[in-house]
Length: 315
Figure 1 (tube, one colour):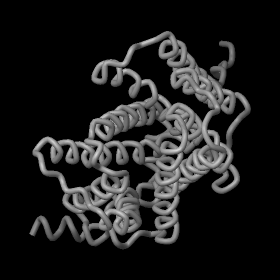
Figure 2 (cartoon, one colour):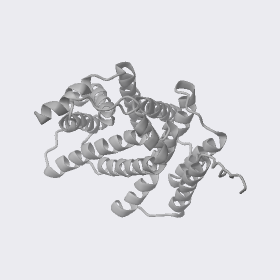
Figure 3 (cartoon, one colour):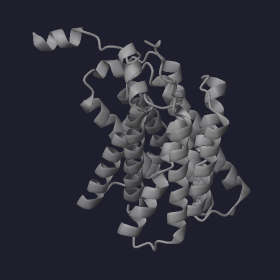
Figure 4 (spheres, one colour):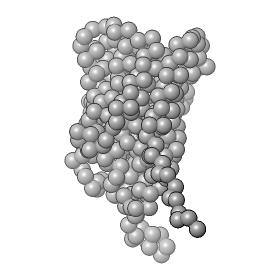
């Protein structure tokens, strides 16, 4: 009886005044959610890097998306509602733009030096800042644009950026950044009426459909237990990171979240030093300083102006 009664009561909409007030009162919650998501995305990147060379991009993508669908269906309390989004058109567009960003980034990485591809791709917060006001009316000030540019300089320093490789590869990296910026702007919009689980579920569903053909053409099936452990880690970290990031957009604007997500570069560099025996250099320290400074400056410029206390009448 209790279970039936619980399922009969629809959940409160996430656009309720209570949540809106919480989002205004707790800006640090958005920062913590985004930083934690960045840390998990860095773990995801480490797991992908240590996968055997026999696994293609389509193999990893297929396991990630199919595993994501299975995990989200398993943890969702309202499985039927996953297939009933309030805005199905925008949900499908989110899945397509996210998949386009993923494919474009992979193409760029294969045709460019890694540092060139990643620096160009990490320009996505700038695209989010450009697209969000045009599409969804989010406002951004000149000082906040400066914070984004400062973070991009930090990313370029850490990755030792140089504009190398083919022009087509550079174009694909920028195309990937464009679609990534558009995707996080759409996520911000969808988060007002949809749960984090539903948003990522559609991304996995559409991504799995796109990857299925190339995957089935020559599937690489894990033969060793450690491979299954790594694949399980890829699925779980990607699910957790995406859900944390999507939830974080309740507490920050789309381009603000993108700015915070550039911290992933710092985590990736640290993991490379710890687990892959990469040599630390001054670039990591200087680039990290730029990124952290941009985050601190952004927090300063985005604070609401304090009103002077009211002065009562003299007695």
